Length: 375
Image 1 (cartoon, helix red, strand yellow):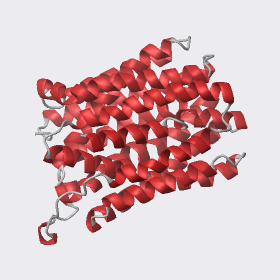
Image 2 (cartoon, one colour):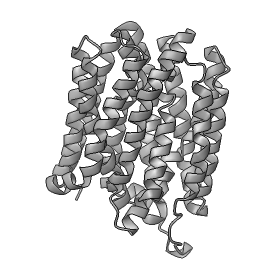
Image 3 (spheres, rainbow, N blue to C red):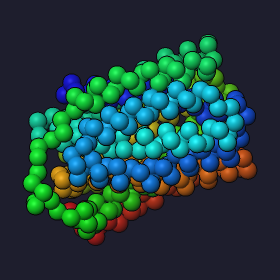
């Protein structure tokens, strides 16, 4: 429990030092909304290309911990280098390299920690929630610091924060050895229609969360909020995730079937609709709570469902398919689309698209459940 919790706490605390403020920093450098959208597309493109091959390599060679450590070291180095470029053309290559190193981290870590939780009868959500605690706390603390000192020290601090994570990654259990002759083919993942449906719905939710991830900070600034309010907004969302991550399994047991995921989609849809309607920055803090409750319930139940359906030999690969859909293909579409909408229609319209994407995910899940695909 301590090992898994420590990884999520450290990883998300480190990420919150710079991730919520990165696009705001780029805007201050003179990067346009459309260029922000292209940067948002470059990162998931690398995820789409590298997440599954690296995760499959980790599964085949049983190098999960080794690749996880190497990826964290690469992330630390690139964050430090991001302090130097000042134009879009120099920022873009480093963002691509950052995405390559980042792409397998969560799929491998989630598979390692979720499988460990199953072996030892632990609540996965109780470990994952520490990521939300760390992200929320770190975002508001460093939001206040960057508002006072500016963004100059952000990349050095962020880079140093990832270095201890290499050691923490080494504490995770690789898992029991499985004989090679008993390994099912990787095509077994595609033959499970229930798994395919979950991945499709997750991709659609990923479009809405990608739009939010790329443009929430910019939208807060558009409504008149500063760095401190951006940090508080991220914290409100992350702290509210804790409740549904802690009790997500119990909620799923009570509701049964896909109802827990549908509830999660509904909560996120309410948040995105609220973003469209509000005109004062402080109101976003309340809506962030709805989004966090929905995301916490969605994420823990999706990871748990994928782990239940996928063969243990392809655990990291199955999780990487979720990563590719949600953090690769979805933002690849959402980033440029959101950038165009930002520059032509206006920031509120971005979240109308988010509502539509969540609604489509709910429709896919309901249709599949009525056909018995999710049994």
